[in-house]
Length: 367
Image (cartoon, rainbow, N blue to C red; front, side, top):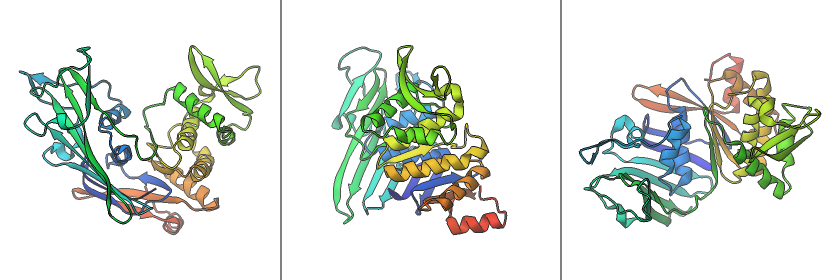
């Protein structure tokens, strides 16, 4: 699990640090203070060796295909420009994480132009609209994102380090050959729903190891009439169906957005054993009266799966419900973080159980 995270030159963070992280971290703050950007930075850090994740996070925000502008055979803009604080690409993005086992991982991201370091020093596969099996790297018209990584053990000895490169140019997108990430991670954006077949696959993985009841028990908190969950092939794709006592089973999506989103949350957490799940605007799709039950289930599944949670919210009712749920749980695994903008910096204010008890008693708004 993460113990702390430090971010430099990423999105709205010039310099930012969270040095008190727990099993479940609920992140609040006003609009445009950096809550979603914080999740994105952690997601990139979880990927460790994979610069291609920088393109994926834009899709989480609703952007479509990669668009690159050329002018007289020179690359003028890149898809990565907005990742750098104040668009300052002269400074490297740095994301450093410390873990509860004492180990450390640092990653750095920088744009390498043709006059800089050659990406041919790193492992790259080229592919794109040219349809060539091995299109040559056009260094005059290609821009490259370089990711450096280094990992240290508890005793501070370097155990792993290297670089990988992601290139974009007239020949298409070049993707790096990467190692598997150190642990699983899942990102559930506010404006994006995982495809039904992904939920169905994750449920099937649970069923193979006899843990599929985890989803049923959780969903029954919202829909007590639910008797069974199963994968059904419909329209050529596997979809999750539920039995609520009607003449036939229904797709979970027919039971409301809340049921579908809740299923995705539980499946993502259970599928990310020993890893991290990041959830943007966790209250979306849920009536406020259901939030305590939602947090009950999230807390139990996260604990049993040894999964760390980072979730954002705008809702005071969501924070209160989480506090009540974890107060009644076997372990109080919740920390609430409020991001505050102070002059040109963003600071993390952390609320423990005692802090929240006092804040709610005094009717303070911790959002």
